[in-house]
View 1 (cartoon, rainbow, N blue to C red):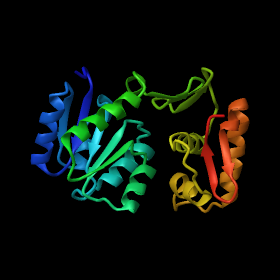
View 2: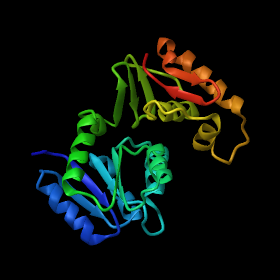
View 3: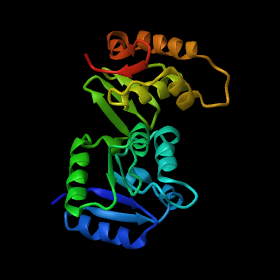
View 4: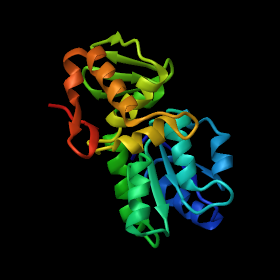
Length: 228
């Protein structure tokens, strides 16, 4: 039985929520339900170990909620999308927003339970409770204080450098184009160029010392994070 693991189920289908609650409780999980993204965001997300999230809901979609969790709240809580939207574009969008898994409806309850176990097993023990997430034994994000620790020493990063590094590291090897990075980190409010991304990457590499080599460029495509 999985002790002390708390799961937030976010779906506007109340009957489905109750089915999920029942089946997950038989595995020993403690569950809570929110019937909208807005209701979910009123809860203390840091109290949970996993969010199971529908995409098509009222005013705020699951995609928008996931984006808010990752970018605005800087939350690294695992997210599993559970949705009827099954196109390749939907799947790619889900993973680009930081999803840990993507399950389409209709689904097998046994498959869902297996996927939940797998995601939780990949989540480093204790990282959520401390507000920290370790990607290597020497690089750690302290989301509470908005700091990056390298070999235990805090780096002096600007807000944009912190967000850029978090995006790349959390991408699990995904290559982000300069245009994608500009949209995600700078948005549409400020006039910036591709060169802005290059300058910030160079600064990050310098500040990270020997670990700056983990920030890599794929010529013609963009930047990604990969441990040597």
